[in-house]
Length: 254
Ligand code: PEP
Image 1: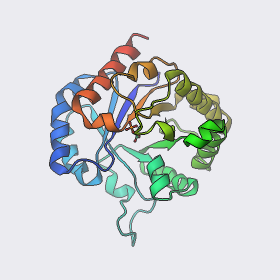
Image 2: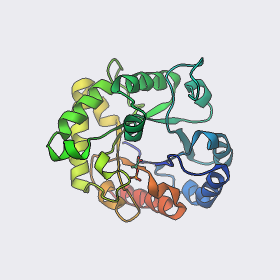
Image 3: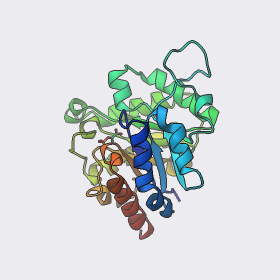
Image 4: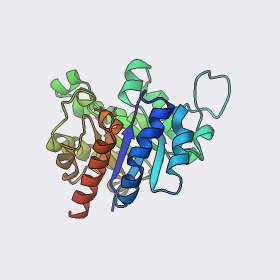
């Protein structure tokens, strides 16, 4: 059984005090929903404060990025040992990192390897651009990103994949549940080819792209979708709690 997971990617939003207030506003309700794994990914500077607030709860913490070296002259970067003890998860290869910070599949592969070696669970993001989608090249793009991102990595279910079509991120134009499930089931096929069927079945795969409390049901009711990576809606306490609650309600009645 794959435990459903909802992760909130706060991106470059919330100052320290705002982050603390956001956590306080959803802490008790999120904690009470046990059948879903809940992961908050605030900006680096708020990780320690959020860690303090969620102590003794079932809520987990994730970082939005990391570098693959342990330490050294890499101004502005954050290393795995800095995250260990603070976070359990790390988002890697988000399309905004690929687009604005020129992250390549080769770099992302090094980060995924390092995260796994360090005991962090990577949330590896993949997804096609609007042009690739329109040209019918979704499968080709996703296959390339998964094979390159996981090159040289042994089969493991200590990894989460987020399918995030770029045309759906922050646009309010989500994929349909059927579309997302079709691509996610394709991703399981790619994992089965690269690794093996058993691991492909065990890896949790999320959908991301304009998920809200109004459309989460559509994704969660699909068999291959194990949860969501939520951007904008994770900045509103009632929205995020609503997404987690509906995931819990739907998955437990399946
Ligand atoms: C994201 O950034 O991972 C994301 C899915 O954003 P949004 O939910 O705002 O589309």
